[in-house]
Image 1 (tube, rainbow, N blue to C red):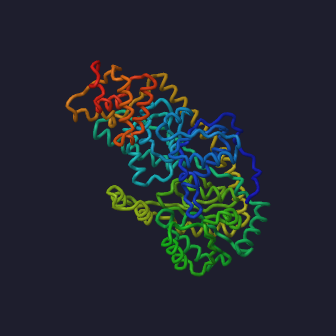
Image 2 (spheres, one colour):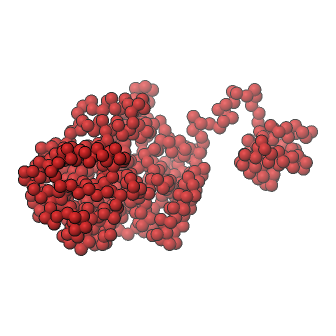
Image 3 (cartoon, one colour):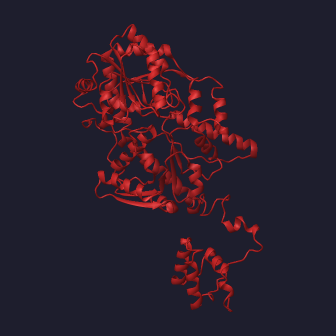
Length: 548
């Protein structure tokens, strides 16, 4: 679709493998073209970057099923026909994590996985989580458990923007303050909170033949006038979880009617459902009845490049707490398209003055209290909660109109911003550059973990205190507690055959682990483990032999 970008990358070629196991689910790494999601787009981009730039020929995976492993191996072999995939089931996930010394989780849930790590010992590997949205009840609950879960300083929660890191720190601060007040707690540990952005594959967005030639060809393909001033709006069309388009549409309508008669709006995206699409289309007619609109379905991924090449300016006025980074400005910059965005979350990091403009935003004190109560009581859906809260987030409309007019009246300035944007992506957000930041992080985590082990600061293997061995947890249920009898007198030939017969009977054949344990005990000459020992007693074997 696009020629290779000829900008020199800043990252040196990697010499060492990336020591990382992936906890893999296709859902997190495979983009659904019928309903593109930012989380999946970021996951698909990362997976390709990992396969291309990690320098790993052998890939450690933890999967829920063979289908996920097979799908991953197909992706790996696209980039390296000699790639090896070592897939492990969930029951042995810690072994796979320990093999590489770190495991990437598909979200921010370090608290849950820190407890699950305990049977392997918390010094055996690092947990690495990644921030996507931070405003769901589940994510907020999880962040609230960091202070009491066995999350260690050699774990990391990657924050994709400075704003998202600040939000995470706020959650941790509030919970620690609560524990100080409630329990008198004085010592807390936190994971590392590095700011590492998402990336894009810059070469995929480079205008073929240069910006002018690509723009002319794309406009012909999309039936846009050659002399139009085209503003692009790209992304998920959802008022509840993305942004309210009313202020932008009314501003564009005003500019088209007065100062910019050649102004066109190009909308490229998908709504989450038919109702939201209808709402968008009705809203566009109400707010901008005379503005020429070109609608392009987001599922037409072959047009992802052309819609950007055809445009003069990319606009995204995010006003929703669902957003934490925002990858669409990077795609626009890589396509030499200047950006006009809200001064919101990750946009504050990515869109600098040389590549675009940011419009001020504001939040009123007390906004969202009822919505948080609704999340707490689970009486309000997540999308409703963030959508209602976003209704009170303000984007400065006066500044928006002024900046739109300023930018669209100076084509030379737009072209300079576009060129600067492409350079900015190549230097900071191209995936080879970002992957090197991951490599440095994993090296830091390894050093922290090994130092903690050498200082005796790690915990030994075991189960969580709230989930001990069942015999310990429920000992009070039984009349007595008995020790395992190591006597092998039960292994009389006739009793051995009887044990095998009973284990394969209708009442016990469902218990495949019992069959396995019985086989290795009898064939290997080892004493039965506690569960097998109990089953043998349940069947009366230890009482059938006079030596027992």
